[in-house]
Image (tube, rainbow, N blue to C red):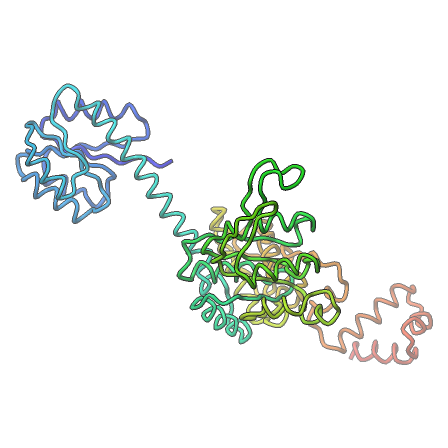
Length: 447
């Protein structure tokens, strides 16, 4: 918790010290005192949280000084302390922007203590709201968080814009790790309904027998263990967005129930009779090809077309390779900032290593790789040895080296020679090539 900065503007030095001593009983208060309006004005650039203002400073009119403070530092709360009780003056000052008006007496310091406690709560609340707004903007301003210059991702940007400007159902398809939920949140939090709830539900993470209750809710006593009424995810979403992730994992029986809800735009809790009208937008995502699942009989065709809406296909990272280094830099910068670490940068060889990998885990894998590299790098430069890929695919590891076909062939031959103790005949037999080919390639290397 940060300190609360308080200025005391009071020409009576003795009274000023009484207020200072009393307020400094709270160690979280940072106090400064001023005897004139001129000195107070000169310090306003420090943006105090609270000013206790003597209405009768020798060089300033109280009302004019208050107006000046509110103009120069509008977030600063001003508590007027006056030697006279004048209701009309107090009302005028409150209209100008004073937080409160106190008359100097034996109880002033106690009243001031309570007022500043209220101001502190108000400041903390404003700061929390400000932080939350920054966090939402940071996370869901898709032009800043969904990074990329490749044609495929620019096409996705265009589709997001169209989704934001309407309430059409959106279906997002893409491999695991391509950022489907990030896209869904970007659509919701940039739309006119961003103040409404965003409710995410992962179909694959919930046992099939519980999905109906989770989505539609239930009444008390509807089944064993239903001790209270519970709203379903659709009801929780209200006028906002429900995001059904991995919808392709839903069994056919549940698909029929979901279709009815979407067609009728209403839901009835399990064990109940009350019809609840739905006003939420639906966004679904899956890594499966739903049209292929329809052909196989695993997904209802009518539900497929009901959910299709505006389709957004997220490209895997391997087909948008020009975005790899841009994303890597973004993730590194974000990670070191969040963890208060020194800035890190990738060496040219580290860039080459990142560019040579296939990323079966897509963006999620790249993020994990560069975050680990940021921790392993002891200085500001991330080198290839700091980059470790979780994939155990030997072909992927081999292709990372960016060699020519001739160089790869030579590497393979040397591998088999080592494996067969430099016995050319055995190595040639294992490779199903003539031993003369091995001799020729080794000789070409020498030349």
